[in-house]
Length: 107
Image (cartoon, rainbow, N blue to C red; front, top):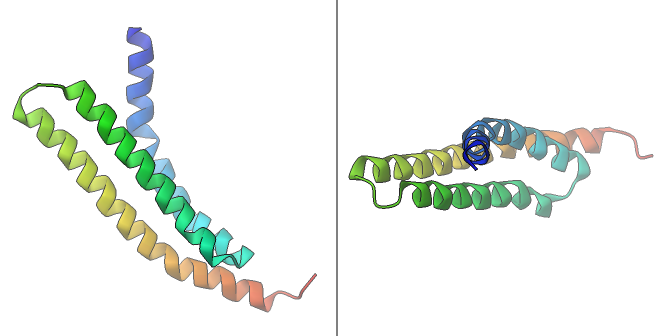
């Protein structure tokens, strides 16, 4: 049981940089596909994961002292702010992918 909790904690904190790194590439690929409606999907799924992770962190903190609750708030706000920034930076990549799609000859 202890080992499972350690693995879960590692996954909770080490997967987020990989998710944030994949969002700009997802925007570029969605632009290449020319599907603007899909542009909402990666940030929405990431937001769901961030909120789920916040609930797990808060459940682990439980009735601990204020610093632990402050840490949970800090993690949530930091992740949501980073998500907003990465999403906004992905918009030009979407348009670049869409422009590249328009330049490529139709198959």
